[in-house]
Length: 93
Image 1: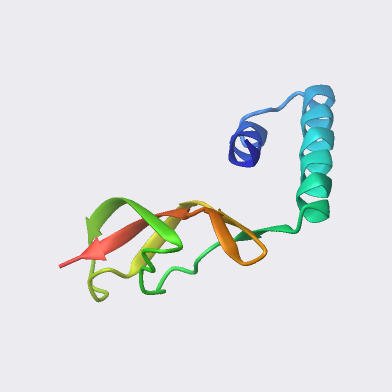
Image 2: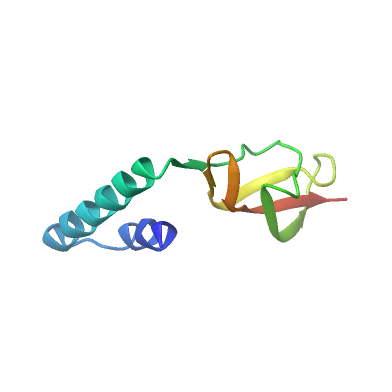
């Protein structure tokens, strides 16, 4: 749900609607914090970790194979356990 809210904010231009959606995002972040849920996002150049990353696409690249090229959405941890893996695009040779 948090990912959908973030994507929505990239498209909303009406300031009244935007402020309402931002308020919802802050409330959700407060709930996450209370439940010890943290957001993580791999860095392009990281090696794919199958426990923390879901590969959604591959692309030709000059970097070594199975290297994160871009992050489509972050992952979520609760007490260091993966609730939702980060969705990533990785390199292939």
